[in-house]
Length: 283
Image 1 (cartoon, rainbow, N blue to C red):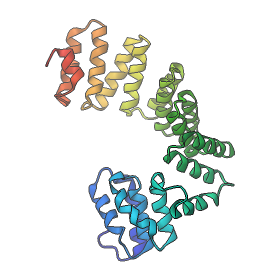
Image 2: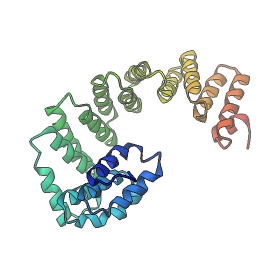
Image 3: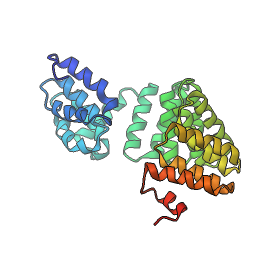
Image 4: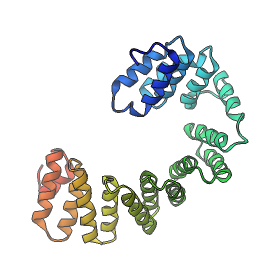
């Protein structure tokens, strides 16, 4: 990026860097600098990258008046929640969104915009329509699940995430999302099925093992719970919640020494971990 002379390539580099912005602060700094680029492709890519970075929103607002429509639309999409009804920016974005409402992707985009503005029932209607038109798109199913979850319709959200998981046989995250939504809705059998799918697809998914252990514990399947939590702790020994959860199961099994050892492992990772301190009687 620092040595590239061609603006189109710099714009491409920004797009490729976007998934890593949370692990390297230089990416945000670079994108902010590119907001002032002479080339509109660079400005557009910078806006898109920074659309997921709330602290940068004040820097995006001037680009709502950019001379190039592409940049204005990207800025309007990022700042959709702020656009006043009837404002030139809102009208231009709405007209753009209306151009593709005969396609599933267009309905999805409109639904996402409505969700960004907090209009969840209307968003759900649009994304449900998109899903009906294209029932084989995992991205649409995931978006539908997120909106349903935000509406408190956990069982329906779980079903959408699970359908997405079935369409992505090598991915574990959709299965985990399905499990969490099902568990929140009290659908524990479906949650277990989804969690088993997640760990089968990715045996190194510590968070899935942890949630599976909690689910087993809730059903009084304590030996299975201990096995799952031990796997989670082995995979991520510096996450204190895993060790603490194991400690609670050992305590329920009458193994006070084992419970204290697990709680101390949690404190070794995080000396301020409150639940573990409480279990050990440390103030």
